[in-house]
Image 1: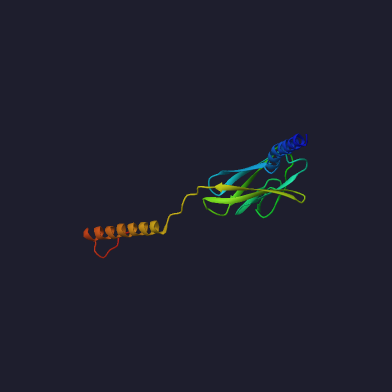
Image 2: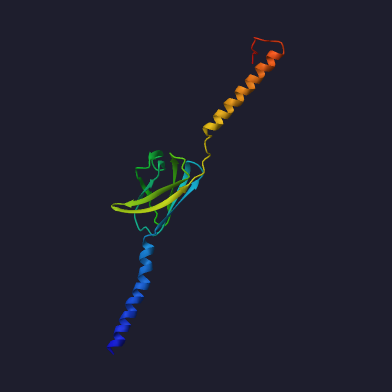
Length: 167
């Protein structure tokens, strides 16, 4: 009889772990972050769910500035946007301007309510046009010099030696 009781208790404890453990993992994923844009200017959406009552402040840790829609101004990404998420089933959209043209940026979004802070990392992928390298500048300068030299040579062969053409 004792053996059946021990097996029964073991099965009950095992079932409790099987049911409770997935719920513990879900409580940490209470919001999602996505960023849409192409180069330096992005619209970041933080989708919140199951946050509970009350308002949450939002902070995006990115190399650049964030637009505080409530204050109607651009701020350093060092600061929190106060009371950005007040409806627990919705989220917030924050515009950002990046200071870098790197193709992949590791960023973080933080939600804060009183002393409770929830953080989620996300990646911003941007495709900025690459600046022309120094070789293009040299190539264009050489072409202009060659055209100017050819024009002077042609001009002097036309019977105007010593006189520069007026452009």
